[in-house]
Image (cartoon, rainbow, N blue to C red):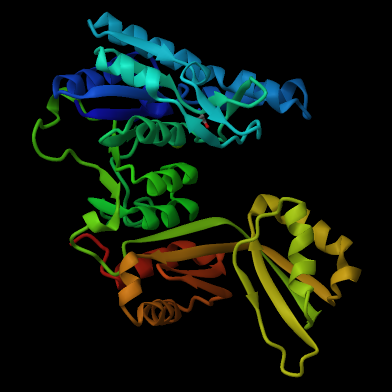
Length: 415
Ligand code: ASP
Ligand code: MG
């Protein structure tokens, strides 16, 4: 029998009434003939509160105890949903990460899943029992609970789907799919019926906060068809045949109508740092980025010029806003070693990106973006590109205008 993973996020299990609604969604899929494993998040707001308590108790706390505390939110919802299912006559039980087990590495607080033994789950599913799994958690090599980083229950769901060979992983959330861009900025944004793994990975890393980035990577590696849909629909009104509203994240082979550009993403969480008159000699990039990496600063866009006379050049790069001060300090401390004249920076910048696998086979996509931005008087500070993406760094105050402009220039506005 085909297996299905259904994942419900915090807003979908926010209270008892909503948990009962989730039970109805599960019932519907059982009646459609699936074996069902459900992955749940904590009730909305709970994880934030738990994190807050650990900080309040001590600013510098043991990461293993942090995990003991924050993983509890999912334990509660897994039990409650199992009860709600039993209450409507469905055979169900809850599973904690360690009971399956979901094995992780030792990075408490931001652990990665190493392995899932799906044997016990598959057995129970075959006996007709619904598995309700606490997301966001696993078992570390030290024998203790580890959590997967904020938003990690998406990753739990995709990993479970891969481990049990599910036909699909349905992510129920508070939006009904993935849009061409943020509908709060562009009301004409369209819901995408399908998006390729690679495109979704770019969208997620670039700030479309629908799925944890790691979950998309996993889905891509294991080819887990992942369907983003809303839990707010009335379970009874969902058509039996035909696709419900949502977005399927899948292999590009499954996408028949390939658009050149699929979506526009943006991130205001960017800061720019420029080193002026850096000695242009072998080893300077290593001297700049080595110490930053050691200080766990995530560097994103990097622009370096070639000096005219081989003496000095400028180097610009971006870091997440939260890491800006740390980066400035690291650079000040290693000024001698690097050998630059001044460092300048700004946190008032944003990155806007144009994404689409169709770019691989179409010329002129970048030129079109630059022309459109120029026509609105938007200055570009830095540019980076990949095979399926063009990103520009601009003044933060132009973010919305840039997103709207690019969205319409590539014909993404709803007709
Ligand atoms: N409850 C966890 C969080 O809020 C995990 C998740 O919801 O995905 O980050
Ligand atoms: Mg989430």
